[in-house]
Amino acid sequence: MKVLVTGAAGFLGRHICKSLNNAGHTVIGLDVSGPPREVFSTRADICNEWINADITKVLPLMKLDAIVHLAAMAAPNLCAANPSLAFDVNAQGTSQVLRLALESGAKKFVFSSSAHVYDIPPRYFPTDEVHPLRLNNTYTTTKLLGEQLCQLYFENHSLSFTTLRLFNVYGPGQQLGYLVPDLIAKAKHGRIELQGSDITKDWVFVSDVADAFVKALSSDFVGPINVGTGIETGLGTIAQIIAGAYEVELDCHPAAIPSRMQCDRRRAERILGWCPTVDLEHGIRNTIDVAVRTMAKMSHSEVAIHTEDAKASGEVVVFEPLIEGVSR
Ligand SMILES: NC(=O)c1ccc[n+]([C@@H]2O[C@H](COP(=O)([O-])OP(=O)(O)OC[C@H]3O[C@@H](n4cnc5c(N)ncnc54)[C@H](O)[C@@H]3O)[C@@H](O)[C@H]2O)c1
Image (tube, rainbow, N blue to C red; front, side, top):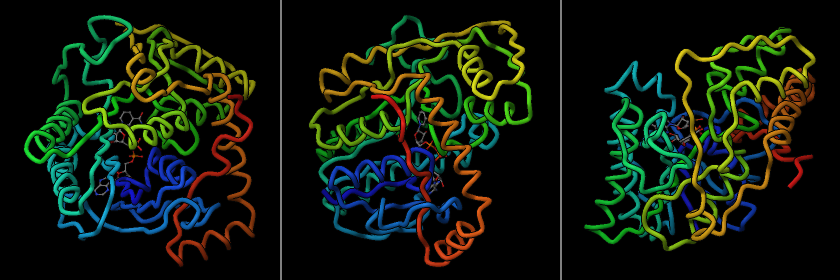
């Protein structure tokens, strides 16, 4: 299939492009950002074509079989700080990409939504797709609008869509501002202090999430599917694994009001044949390994020259290898 991936330069985008490419699809990456900086691989490895474009503006016409729509203001705190931009990118931008799907002849649309639409904490655990939805903040409101827009295009134009409601994704290449990279950054400075160690979330490794997107693309199921492991793990456990790997002191404090997240993933298993394959311990160790090797490579002069050459030629950057050494 010829697949457009919006948000291709982002954390999930780079992994999903690579998985789609490995699955034999022709991948067109689209992002408003220039290619990321850490070049260890060429654009040809993950994308057959690259488009620099803003989804809130007029998008170039093209022929497509499917679209994976990831481009978004993805951090809830940034959405809260700038609601107008959040609605512009996440709702209006999604509407534009849906229109492009129609004009391009695409037959399938895969939308990245969030488990936050069930509220934090949800009313029951594990949380399935029929759980009531709640407009609890700007980010979830824009995600629910995106889901509704997909439904609108299905009702009015028969555009088939699958919404993947992602739980807490982690893995190589995630930017600061999320728990795992933040704890790794603290560990590098010799000590981890953590508030809210008893808060639980459902952590799912990025290569497993990418696999769910690949599977959703060839599914004719219309509607939402949860993507999570079904395993509830405290923030303190994640901190322990990272502190242990770096051999640094760990100082954990419970939350004033603890909350929980746990995915019911039976629909993903039944409809997509999807199951998570990377356990938390291996996923975090792999994330640390890649972070360490990336830093080592970045300081090497040959890599610096390669990076400059690649940037000049517009190559896309991926962290590589993505899942080397992870037990499956
Ligand atoms: N990472 C998670 O744990 C998680 C959980 C639930 C849902 N999601 C959703 O998955 C998607 C990808 O998340 P991510 O973690 O890779 O985020 P990310 O911030 O790393 O990537 C988002 C990408 O979208 C691009 N983008 C932003 N505005 C754009 C615009 N106007 N035009 C074109 N591109 C634009 C950014 O440049 C960035 O590369 C998002 O829709 C996010 O809401 C992520």
